[in-house]
Image (cartoon, rainbow, N blue to C red):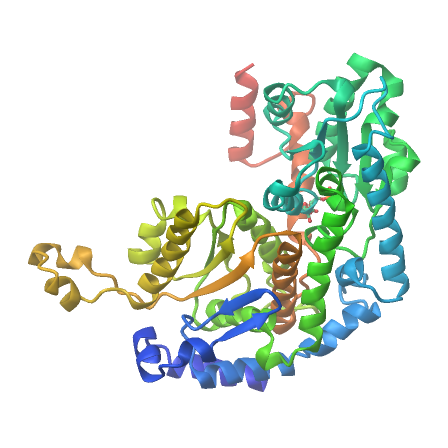
Amino acid sequence: MSGQWQVVERIAQDESDISLRHLFASDPARGQKFSLSCNDIFFDFSKQILSVSGLDALVALAHEAGVQEHFAGMMNGAELNVTEHRPVGHMHLRSQGDSSMAAAAKEQTERAIELAEAIRAGRIVGFSGHAFRAIVSIGIGGSDLGNVVVADALEAWCNGPACYFVSSIDPTHLDNVLTRNNLSPEFTLFVVASKTFTTSETLHIASRAREWITSALGAEAVSHHFVATTAAPKVAAKWGISNDHILEFFDWVGGRFSVSSVIGFPAIVSCGGEVFRQFLRGMAATDEYVQTTPLAQNAPVIHALLGVWNASMRHSSSLAVIPYSHGLRHFPAFLQQLLTESNGKSVTVDGHGVTYATSPTVWGEPGPAAQHSFFQMLHQGTNKISTDFIAVRRTSNNDESGQQILFASMLAQSAALAFGKTEQEVRADGVPESLVPHRTFVGNKPSTCIVMPVLNAFTLGQLIAFYEHSAAVQGWIWNINSFDQWGVELGKALTAQIEPILTGKQSIDTDSSTAMLADWYRQQD
Ligand code: F6P
């Protein structure tokens, strides 16, 4: 790696035993110095184990990696996704600029809003003339996770048909959604969300949904009851979706970066076009910020640098994402795909093996439940874990005391992780000596707090774009391609080979474990 990488590495080594207690004691203004605003997002990274010189060195590393030039490249349509020979265009999905990419995206967003508004107003109805009451979105990965977050977060704005999501090929998922919600074919619109329209799980579920419609309403109903959101319109048309129900996005939008494309159609139907426009404005606000703010004060860039610092320099292979907001309950799953599918790579853009750790494992659950579960491990376990806490000041209800407990819990957990409780402090509480080791908290566990005044379409857009940019910046610093996902292909190919042996139609020469388990499967029939 470059000279600046080595400078950062040296600082990490020299300061490896630095403590948060010491960092805070030696600088009473640390909180103010290690925090930034990014439009409505307030980002406090003071409880990361990092000195001023470490931070300065990381910012220099971002300069050296050409972060600003890469953002410019995204806007210029440069082929940043080198292994798939594609530009990386998700900022164009919400840009007001006059590029051809922005124009193409705008046209499709307007089509999606027009179609959604017609459905909401009952101008477009089901085959038997009934207005749609439910939208069932069928998709997986990037064609599902962002939509789920948007639907949860904007629940209070949902005044149209209810939205349901089916992502698992386990038939139980579709069946439960249809039966437990008493959905009827006459009133149900399916959205098949798939960038490629080749994902086997999605197509299998969609075929079962098509059978459900055709067996109740006949084959002609399919064109009325299905919409596709896809970058493969011809394949969707061949599958049976009518052209005026095919909403397009583009091969220059990665699946996990597609939430601001027409993939967001279910939310538009549920909440209306204006709410979705607000969401896009929020994302555009972060886009503008990230491109115009000096790197040293640029919150998503600093967030990315902290990820590099923790994973590559401090050898922490785990990032816990803990939302203290019910509306963000599925945000950890969304971030898991965004960050790990983007940066779980071990070769550089030019194909050489990396010599440093890249993406940590990203995981998490909402704070209130997590505190009564794996927080034991966060506080007293042996793994090196960094935590992103995310919280909101106001929710749509008026339970101020509940909100206070929620926010206080996040502050308490973050402080407990950082500062712990020494043996002396435990003894001072009168704890029996035999229990002192059990009641001690070593502390010095890094965390970041990301807080917003309110959760609405505008701030949610800002938050999602914040993390999209953090993922991209990390990739540029690690010199890996954050925009491909070849690592998912081998498993897909093997599934296609193994599936026929489960039905006994074919035998293949395979390893003894796979053969044994395939035998076991057949014997259960
Ligand atoms: O298998 C991984 C993946 O390609 C993700 O990158 C993507 O978000 C997901 O599958 C779904 O793909 P598609 O939208 O093409 O169905």
